[in-house]
Image (cartoon, rainbow, N blue to C red):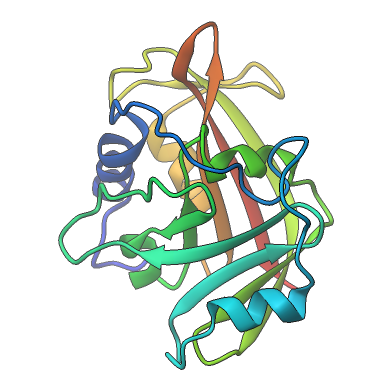
Amino acid sequence: MKPNLTLKFFSVLLVAAFLFTAVMPVEAAAPYGGRIGVRAFPSFEKFVSTVTNGQTGVVRGVYVSDVLALRVVQQPAGNAGFVSRNSNVATQFGMAADQGVTGLLAHNYLAGQTFFNLAVGQEVRIVYGNGAVKTYIISAVYQYQALEPANVYSDLVDLSNGRRVTVGDVFGAVYAGDDHVTFQTCIKRDGNASWGRLFVVAYPA
């Protein structure tokens, strides 16, 4: 983690701004790869042509073959809680971008539903506005239960081993470090849309 942003501040801000923001689902078309009956999945070339706009260094799309093809928007300046309500859009987490990490946020009833189809070994392609592409490989999928879903300081339980961990532990594992991509959404269970957390991490190929 870069020294100008403490892990505690980083993690608590993101949890408070995104994971525990109560929102009502909106009506929207299912994203590519989301549910049965969705639109035909686009070729990578076609996808690139729809998201590029000439902006160098600005993330405009994320593509995982036969899994997801999402346009990416950036958070407005000063609004770390913004997450798109569009079903085919992921939101780039601004504070992660400042640290050289591509964090992609989406609500689990919209584009985030496709994150559950991501798996270790899959290729992730990040598309920039000028058409440049960076390729990553998924190396880890993490799922956690929040012991107190409405508490920003709540400890979490790693669903793979039952270990209890802190918010700082989790965010250090998924957001700190060198260039990588982290997908994040909530896990809905037992009628609670914020029951848990899903993180999918991919490193440069």
